[in-house]
Amino acid sequence: MSTTLQASLLDLIRRTSSDLPADIREAMERGRAVEMKDSRALMALDTIDCNIATAAQDSAPICQDTGMIKFYVHYPIGYDILTFEEAARAAVSEATAIGYLRQNSVDSITGKNTGNNLGPGTPQFHFQAWRKDTVDVRLMLKGGGCENVGAQYSLPAELTEIGKKAGRNIEGVKLVVLDAVWKAQGKGCAPGYIGVCIGSDRAHGLEIAKEQLLRTVGDSNSDMQLSALEHEITRICNGLGIGPMGFGGNTSLLGCKITAQNRLPASFFVSVSYACWAHRRRGVTLNPTTNAITGWLYEEASETLAHDVSPA
Image (cartoon, rainbow, N blue to C red; front, top):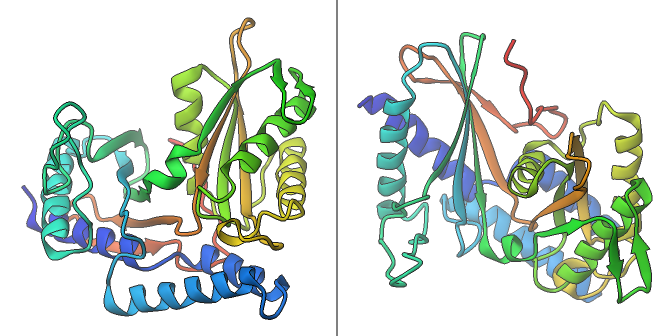
């Protein structure tokens, strides 16, 4: 197993757990600028800001729930992904021992904590080959609180709380996404960041929705209709009065990212993945021969990082 690869992934874990990406930080600052002085919303955001700064300074976890560990890896043909998995597991165990990660992997039958974040299904790996000569590794640490408020709808759907029916169209999609954000208030650690998948099947739709969270706040959707929907949902959600941590205010959603996948004629699923304000995702590029880090991703708020990287 490559000790260089383990060291590279350990550094990626450290920064992902402790140092919030630039685009999320900037979005939080925009939220602070629009909240009223001495409001509970601004007090919450000020406290969060202090937490963000301290965590980065001390390389300490931003949140006590260091989340499900998800690696998204694009690699050149011939790259040894079995060695990558071995090195990643060793790095996760080491990061847990150091304190970059909390002990978060629990046996679902016995309730016993493994103590090192290793076990069936943890960490998770998503591998995709491509024809580039570099390895692109994205890491997402997604906490349980925000994961609990993710949602999936099968359209048409009756939304009894608002007395409306969401049909199989863009308006129906908008209604169920707004419903998901409204129901999450106070439980998903707002301001949130949401990924949405229109279509696909149940399992894949939820996974694709989560992959949307790898996109940066300021990127632009290449589909103009979906781009408009992203902006409209964000605007409406920030007018719902949910606010930071559900305390009320103008900052309920940092961003909304939407994609569409083909579906079966009989099915029309809309899947929503909710991330909390502590949206921990970082990335590195690696030299495929030495496995040394050649660059960091999510360093600048202006970066545009596609979630569905082309294999070409």
